[in-house]
Amino acid sequence: MSASTIAPGWLGMPALDGDDDAQDWVAARTDGLRTAFGGRWTPELEQVVPALLTAGLARRSADDLLSWQVWPGAMPVFATVHARIVASAAIPDWRASGASVAPFESATLGPGVQVSGTASLDDVRPGTTAAFVVHAFDDGESTVVVSVEPTLAEVLALSMTGLVGLIDRIEVERPDGSAFRSTPPAVFVADGGWPIEEGSA
Image 1 (cartoon, helix red, strand yellow):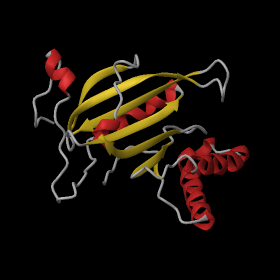
Image 2 (image 1 turned 90 degrees about the vertical axis):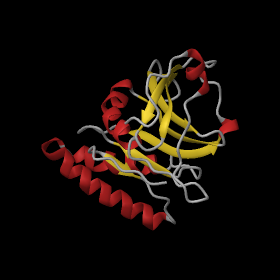
Image 3 (image 1 turned 60 degrees about the vertical axis):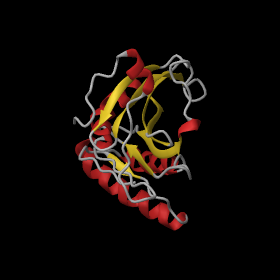
């Protein structure tokens, strides 16, 4: 899997071999964020930002093929994005969960769905509701899933332009060397709700 985005603030999280690699990554990204924040950088951020970057690295899963921390503005808060491939049979019925499900098209992957909803952050910040979004593209055997962990709604909103651009650039190679291409989700075909012609960008 490969992907890129031209949006600022997207920090790819590689699979790191040890503490030294993690420290090097945190130091380099702190330097980059210090430059991006410019005059808004403060002595407090000199301590807070490396701690947040380190905490974000811990959220990278062994199942992730790609993952990012998204710092969408000059503020010490970020979203975590995961890109994975899972078996089609492992995908839940998102409509039954009460989430909002809508057709979504990727220029490289094909037709899929966008799943969005809210989740409680009471364990982190009592009384706070977070927003999440998942994009999934299925070919009948495997599903490419790009998800944003629940985060503040404002942070998710600021991350969406970069996320959509990223999804339009994700490329996945099947084991036989062919390019992954999803099929239109059956639920929307059956409902007459698929609005985008196959192959359109």
